[in-house]
Image (cartoon, rainbow, N blue to C red; front, side, top):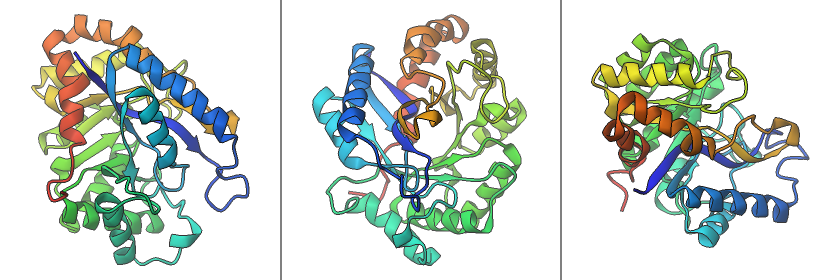
Length: 299
């Protein structure tokens, strides 16, 4: 069976797009490390990876294309801007102009290439969306509605998630195409509420050596409890899992504490024993394809 990873990063840059050190790395070294990592994933029969690095945190579509060409791994990357890390060329853009930019990356190509984004990633501050972030959320909703595309939301807290969902819906976005990332930090009741509205609930940081950077437990037993609760509620088709690991980060001190190979090497056997083989297959492949499928109005 071919499988997928729903939330990973080959390269991520936390310096910020206005910093002199942003994207200032040895790309030969980065490419080599990423190709090696992708090759290891292919050995695990993984053929699809959803990369969550978007505008503002180091998205490099030429890097992703090179990894794909050299390993055969299919990679889907996003458009959208991370929190308020707006690059200088978009700093003065209106909401409408940002929406047009996102839509163009979904339908035409990214940065002069023919490589198209497959979905839109947004993010919110944990205490709730800022005004600058809300403008990006509005733009994302407009572009996603026009393209029929998915929006992935980095949001560790349920209250902030609900606030962003309200903004998206006011712009006419269908929350059945929402992926709520870092949902493990919220309660099962919050997970079920979003899933019953049709949204996908994503449990990240599987394999972390310590508690999630936002404060929640990520040991395998805790993750299995969250997933099993969703399956027991009849919502297994609304669940996604992944490690949310980085292969290469700038600065190096920002490297995450987990490996993208952990999910299939160690966690998946435990998951099969807990929820069964059929439900596990759905989480590992079917749900990923459904969540990140091409926009319904994109040719």
